Length: 473
Ligand SMILES: *Cc1c(COP(=O)(O)O)cnc(C)c1O
Image 1 (spheres, rainbow, N blue to C red):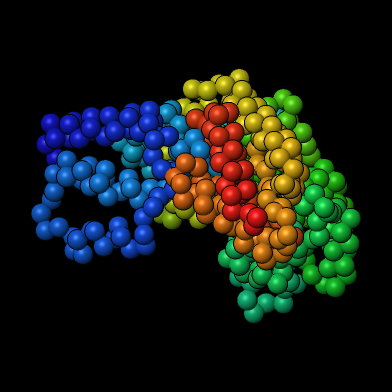
Image 2 (cartoon, helix red, strand yellow):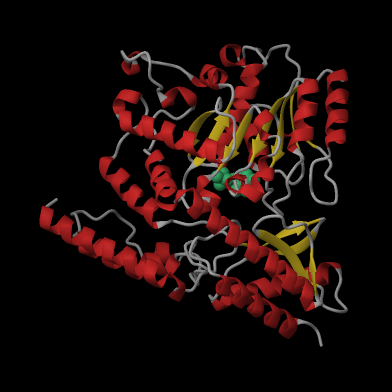
């Protein structure tokens, strides 16, 4: 590649990014692409000769951008709103240029040591115990898989060596609730635990796991010959951000000698805010805990962190060193030993950049605003009179619906679905739905760093107007 061509293309790409960040709110949040339209615009075969970078960038603007649903848009309120922040984007660019494979310490000492240092900062900022070991994976789903594998290793059943099939082993069980993120069940599938052995413990009216019901399930299962392997509690469930009573659950786990895993993928960062530190109450007793800086901590996707107090068990579950990866250093950490993946991106750089660029107080201020706006939004929803709040909203998500007069059950669900579809179709804002007790709920999640108070309340005004227009007369 000729250097002037690269320089020009890089400058153009950087200019595009700068302008994108300055004008993100001018794009429709939700892509209006129709299925197949993008794929059909791409030639069916690989080009025979290389194309100029300028042609690639032309197509990026012409073909790719219109097919983007803008997660970076300040009025993206669907799922969990996230941010590809400026320091994170710069780190991604530099990390792509370095193209480091952080599998061994020696394959880039900086990648390993920056991961260790940034994870230490984050652990301390979250108020978690210093003895926790941290490792970065791509997503919470994969962090959870590794936690569950370490929990299985802790049982000493030699499954790593002998496998589980054809042996006289008890059935292993994992405990969670219907509100638990679906990855726990997928991870159990992958580890050979089986979906039937993922036990859903009942929740109370605030969608929180009932510790007494957990204790009874554990006792009954032991008596019936099952082997409890792991309890997965959640701090900030995906539908409503409910927070399981981790301290009480930890006491039950200790009594029944079961691994406690805490999924704090979304809500974990809230613990950096002094008055929200309580969200991780009891998590110091957990065996493992997941936090996703790519959710509510402004780090570009993907970056999930697993902390565990059992570094040795995690390593025992996964370390396997072929001859070609032997390494002379003995006093270093080789992150390939802590997972199925050998090759690893240098993700620590973007976490380090983001933490430094905002600082503790910068993070606190942003998260505090998100929570304050959510509480004010909930107040306005309640005040409107014809809306209902459907779940507690301790953090930055609120679930609600338009209780249009004369509509019930399926008809009410359909009316609320029309409201979301109509608002999303405008391109002004994007939000999503969930189901609570079987009924459709509108769900607004605040979490993008560029969101302003006006974005939240202009969107609410649009929802309110749309709901009343669509309601039967
Ligand atoms: C989003 C979410 C996940 C899944 O996160 P990925 O990183 O996309 O795998 C897991 N748990 C909770 C509570 C979540 O909100």
